Image (cartoon, rainbow, N blue to C red; front, side, top):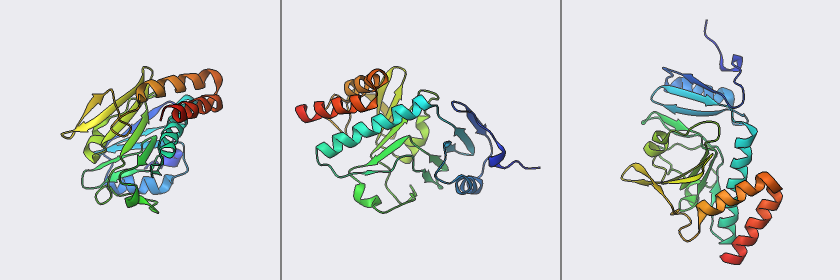
Length: 212
């Protein structure tokens, strides 16, 4: 007897690995789960990982995403924010759902699109992963060609830049080359845990307007 995914119960902060999942099965699971769900999926060459994040994960995801939007808006840079949209390429047998992703240079290419296919659509210019409850696997993003990946964990923000099809850790963000991103993200995410999100975002917006 085959189990259906809706029969499984995954507790927040836990992961489930399923081996030998075909691309057709992945597509069926995505259709079954839909977009309005807590679980996030990662798929690579038949191995499917399902993860349900903890509240601390969601808080960090939201505030970092909001900070990116403020930086882009205050500089009047056009962008599309696609959140945890599934990024998939059947030919590479890769699929991943970032915590947040942004189309900036390529924003015009995805306006009005509700689903993406990385075999024809460009990858997001920036993807963000929160590594508080699990460790992001870089291979998915490398193979999909995402040029910049941020990972926020217990030690703060790490910027990974794609060079010659491999990620290299960087102290600077190509998306925001003249801004001390690592310092700012770490400072205001930590502040939000003390004074709350609203105060931290207000202070960050003030910093941006005073310094940019």
